[in-house]
Image (tube, rainbow, N blue to C red; front, side, top):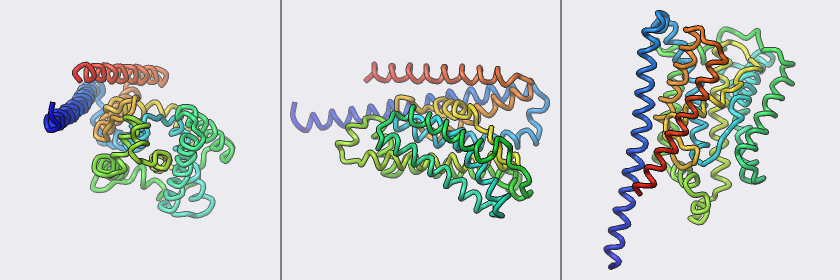
Length: 335
């Protein structure tokens, strides 16, 4: 075979792989969207309170927190990592943001910057534990989860932060032209991160590391620095999500975010992010976040116990991961 023929064959192979990957993403997102529509219709029929303006507003605000933090989780999952600390970090960020407003007289926006800073520091810690200390992401973030939750209870004395001004509710309960302000923020975050992952070198490096870390290192990518940057950016989004969650209830709650990591992992995986790394898109994650929010909201409307909700979310995670494995096997067999 000549060099030209080999080059043409290689290009055809790359195009074929690219096409199969695009089809795979489309199938995942279409499946998630179909499940979302079916659940929406079912809840409309099952509960007369589902389609009320107040409930739809609540769904939008609830989805915003899950979606923003799930976006952060998606970036980490693409690198073939996992972040189990998102719930405790979100709680810590929200509590600190509430405390600086109540005790130091900070404005909402200044407090939001502080909360984002808390998330960024937690992300930096996770990144350094994974890259410098070479601790597996599961263990590193599990430790951060424990430390973060402990710090929340220490600084609050296990008591919620109350006595906040009404203006503190703007992030979580405010609206613009009838649209929840939190939803507007979510759209901006989703568009920004989607652009970052699909149109920039940052995104290319992120996918490359998740697909083959050693190959990425040999190609000249500064893996340690870039991976740390991914965790820091994820922490920024977690801090923002935690502040929105605190704003929704106009208080800083030390118990917030327990089991939140399950919801955001489920949202990312439902949307097509692969726990094996190298795959995931923000569009799918947002669809997954809406699906999880509808499950939570519907369970409340139908008076389903929180314990059964956990079972449902666990089953969804199993189904999504199994589908991801099945999809990968099919792609590999066709390759």
